[in-house]
Amino acid sequence: MNGIRLFGLFLLLTFMTLVPLRAQQLSLFTQYRENVSIINPAAVESDFLAFGNNVSFGASYRAQWVGISGNPRTQVVRGTFLADGMRGVALMVGGQLVNDQTGPTGFTGIYGRLAGVLSGDPTYGGLVIGLSAGMVQYRVKAAEIVLRDESDVLGAVNQSQMFPDVGFGLYAYKSIGGRYSSVDFIYGGLSVPQVIGLDLTFQNEQGEFYTKRIQHFYGLLGFYKFFNNDSFLEPSLWVKYAPNAPTNVDLNLRYQLPSAIWVGTGGSSGGSVHLEAGFTLGNNLGLDNTLKFGYGYDYSFSSFGPTAGSTHEINISFSFHN
Image 1 (spheres, rainbow, N blue to C red):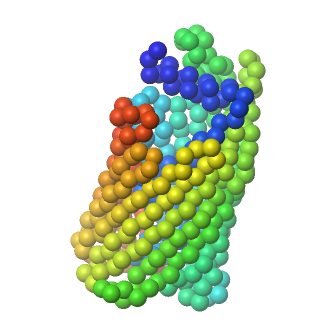
Image 2: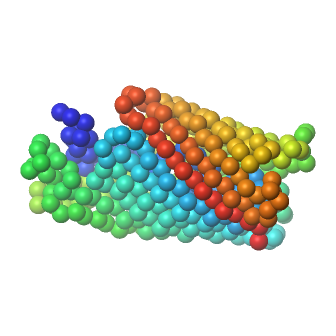
Image 3: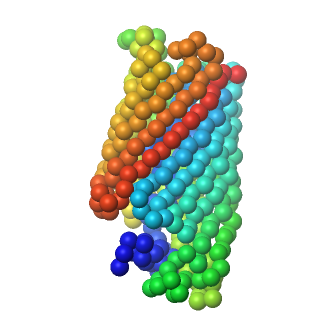
């Protein structure tokens, strides 16, 4: 049986089994810091902590396991505004559009998020409580799921369903005195970006098949170490857990050079390593706004083996202070 039919068999078992599937169901990222608001609706954007910009827009594209038919592909568009001039409770609002496609299955979600920053001065730290809410369309191209040969398919009608989605998060950040700069930042958070668990049931002429959407739990911890030459170092740790799936830990390190270039590396307990690089155009060129571009490359040593293919991710963001 060739690779395409194996992939079709995997999808068949996923949707037709009587036991609901319990595995990673949310989009994955290489550069988590650039999509932190999607994972945690209370998270403060990296553009605010690193550059002091309270308005941020970004977009990303990720192609996972390139070379495998039906490989996952994810696109994200996002925006955030933090009213850092407020005291007591500063509001943070934003939204994002997420599209994810894996073979004949996929989803598209649109979300808004609202958070409150409890702080005497949000510029130097605070405790954030955030919620996200939106609608998600789940899709199945049943005609593309081949069982034995091209004439034996799961169904002939493509189907989709719409469901509400809610996320919850806690986040805290605080400035601390730096030895080589006036201020550094430490941050951390906990989140459940998919609070509502659902049984997604699809009907076709051969019966019904379904999968179960379950809660995922995320934790993060990071630190910004700034230097007097306008460079900084950022180690970060991500922990991801879904019931009946292995806990995954991501460890990352990024260094912003005094010039426009930044580089990074990392790895995960799931058996992958990654490299990343990019450039930042902003204060280093005397600009009030900040334009940031990043590229991430993953290589997986997971149970799929080296043939799983590599992963490529591109991120771009534009931020400024208002």
